[in-house]
Structure formats: C-alpha cells, structure tokens
Image 1: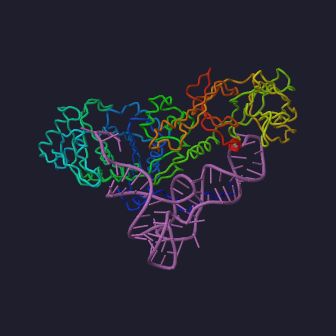
Image 2: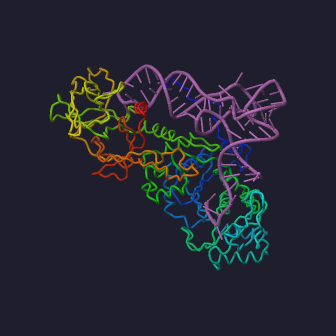
Image 3: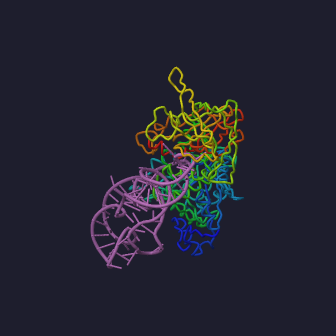
Length: 564
RNA sequence: UGUCCUGUGGUGUAACUGGCAACACGUCUGAUUCUGGAUCAGAAGAGUCCAGGUUCGAGCCCUGGCAGGACAACCA
C-alpha cells in the first residue's frame, strides 16, 4: 500500500442514532458503572422475520459496539400459543445471522417463582387484589378516555384474604378464568395500562418448559419489565407500541424496589410489498398460501435464507435502514440492493439457460468438443477459472433472439453478430420453425478466429450471450419468485383484507432449464450468479437427479426497464 | 373527544446541539465493459407540516395550530 486513500475522516464523529447517543451519554456519566446490558426478547409463538432482524441487530449490535452483553430471552408467558419448535427455529436464526448469546439464554418462565414472590409483595403492600370479575365484566367496567373505570367490587378486599385467595389460585383450587390478580393503581389514569391491569390469570395448561408446575401464568406486562430488571438490563430496547406500557413497568420497578432498567422505544421496520404481522404470516402458512415458514417468498429469516439471502446482506440492510422513532416504510429495492451488492462479490458465475432454444453452429465440426476457459468471478480473481464444454449444438435463451428486433436490441437477430460468452462470435443465418410457427432451432455460423483470448478476438460486437452446450447440459428446475403481494402496503387497507392483494404470480416454476455440467457439484444453499440473469441458490429440495434452484434476485436489468 | 409519540427530497437516515440541508436507495445522463451486471463520472429532486416569535442568524429554541400514528385482549 503506497497510496493512502481516505475512506473516512477520522476527525468527523460518526453520526449516531438516538439510542447510541443515549448509551454514550450514560457511559460518559458513569451510569451503572459503565455496564451495558441488552436483550432480545422474542415470544416463541412464530418464526422471526426481517423486522425482528432489525431489532436483534440493534440489541446485539449496541452490546458489541460498547463492550456490553446481549441476552437472548424467550418471553414465554403464554403456554397456549408457545412451543419449543419455535424456540429452536429462533435460536437457529439468530446464530445463522452471526450473533452469539453464549450461556445467556434465558426464559421468562425461569422467573415464574420470582414473579410469584413479587406478586405476594405487591399484595402485602396493598397494591394488588384478587378479582373475581369475568372477562366480560372487566370490559364492561372499563371507562373511556375521559371517564374513569368502575372500581372492581373486589378492589378493597383485605390483604389477608387476597393472600389466601392468590395462594389458592396458585395451588389450583379454582377453574380457568374464574379469578385474576390485578394491580391496584389508578382507575382515573389517562393511561389505560394503569387502570388496575391484570397480573395473573388462571390457565390449567401445560407449559413447554415448566410443564404442569403452574396453573397461573403472568401477563406479559407483569413479566417483561421485571425480567429485564432481574437480568440487570441497562437498556431495554423495544418498538413504539410499548411506549404507553413504560409508566407501568416503572411503577412495578418502584413498588418492588428492584433494578431500574431503562426502556427505549424505536420504530419497527415496515417493508413495502409485504406484511410483518406474525399472526398474519401464520395465517399464510396455515391456509396454504405459501408452503411454510421457510417459503422463499416469506419475509421470515427462514424464508430469506432459503431464498438465498446472506446474513451479511441482512445485517447491512438493518444497518442502512437506521433507527429512529418515526413510522417508516422501507422500499424492498433497498433489501435487493443489499443482497446484490453482497453476492456480486461472492457468487461464482455460471452458465444457465432458463428458457432454452437450440442454436446450431453449421460451420462447427460435428462431434467436436472444446473446453474453453472462463473466469469464475470477474470481481475476484482469486476465485479462479474453470473449463466449459463447447460443441456444435448449444442452448441459448429464447429471449436473446428476435427475428424482427427493435432499434436497440443488442442480441441475436438474422444477420447480426454477437459474442458467445468466453467462446466465439457468431452470426445468425436462419431459423427452423414448427407447425405453430414457433422457432425450434436457430442456425448460425461462427468466426473461428474470434475465440475469446485469441489474437483475433479483439473485434467488438454489441452483445454477449450466455449459453450451454446441448450434449453436456444438465436439466434443472428453477423457481422464480416475485413479490408476494401486488400492493405496496397490503396491510394498510381498511376495507380490504391483506389476502386480496396476494400476487397469483409470486411463484413461477421452470421445470426444464439447462445448466452447465459443473453445477453437479453445487451444494445446498450455495450461492451462484447465473450469468446475465440473476443470483440463484440451491434449494434444499434439490437432489442429484433433480436439481432445484431458487432465484434470489434478478440482476439489474436496464434493458427490461426500458421496455416496460 | 383524552393521553402519549412523530412530522427533513419519491423512500429511509443525518446535520458536530443556533451558523444558510448531507449520505444511502431509487430515478435520469454519459463513459467503460466479452454479464444491457459491476465499475467510473455527473444530473435532477427537499429549503425541513403551517403561522407567529426570540436571535445578527432557526431544521434545531418558544407559542399556537395542523397532520399522521399508538393506546381501551384474562395476547405479546
């Protein structure tokens, strides 16, 4: 390195998002002795999606950046909807994304005993009571924005009675839903969450971790803040919908006199042309609109992985979208930019013809095979070269030939010349057609002096085509994906259900594509660039006898854009 | 008719805490290219929701509006 290129000016402070600013201020003031502890708290009731990725990139990222730790904590307070299969999927996703929580894998259910003790304390302080109102009755007692709630008739039950009842609730003496434990806060509060929120409900249900130990389960609001506190979380990062919950968490922390975690809220990620609601994604899976949580059209991390996205591209995306408090909708084009940028540097180029038409080189000897050297990645010399078989009969892309081309068509047409990538310059001479008038073969001649790399190869032609030698080609299935929804905001219509915007053409299966023989070696999830077409990867469905590729994303195509 | 949060190019995020708006994506030119990719060079596009005020000076401060969003599950 003789020349020093100035990439960034070290004097200029990197711009920080508002959370980094808070963290740096806390570090400067010596809060918590400079300790930084974050956590990512998913509920194991569904698969993680790219919105979660934004969140945990932030959680783990802040910890990494400031020498702190980030815990993984499963918020498993609802035994009815949660399951260990989701736990496994979530762990796999976060690891795959490149983050490590070491031995700090926690569960809200680890704290059930502690939470129960906290509840006893609150009851003893006269700040909680056992309520025997039904769900309907509670709802009926709710006030409005400007009217306070009607007090529960059980609100002033004596402490000893509350204690007795709560203990018996825990002991399983009462049926489901017959009573709840409620905090006694402020029925007149403008914040609905402060109007005697429910802390515990009775659920005689088996929990995926605690089994049958409990028949009362804490509500999220009762569990979340204290779980943070128990873990000594210094900066509890979450999305905007929890802003109104914060005063409640702070009230609990105060009453219980426990470690004061600070909650900071940021805006969740929204992506155009997709949905991010776990409930609705589950619906797509259950109703068969997609093939599963890992369907390559899904915005889930499982789906993105199968589609061919890399962890690096998703992390880059999360970095680029930024962190702020205003509602946002990110253009999917940015996600696509991130994966193209990553794969451009990494993915080996290979020849594959998706919609093949036969090309016969009339002046090339029958039965002859040449092995032509071609570069694996022009962006990275270290990826080397390989040999491609070339012969008299090839396949090219049907779209790359037009009998009657428009002005700026740089591809093959009668009488025109193009370069066959890494091979010869050819000129189209004639076509064969079937009874329907469809082209069945294109005949051409090649210039034997024009072989790539040769002295006479300097000649310029306007286009270069990819191809595959017909006798050497392998057949493969290729799955093309388009956006799952036709509407930029499928979930944003009051009158219409999001499913009305499902794109009927989101999946196109091409059963008989022709690919170069080296693809025999490709392994599951390998990333490739099909020259001139896009980035693809090997689907897990792929077998030695039946190769299957997914299109991750097409190449940028200015020609297609001009023509739309 | 409440409380809270938020308003900066098409999209997203900045602006060293008061010094005349920057970066990325997208869009459009041109160069180059054995991928109509990549790369390189360049352009258009906001005067910061509105109206007042403080100040030599406001996207940043103050006042008053307006707009959008969140919140009323024994879900998280």
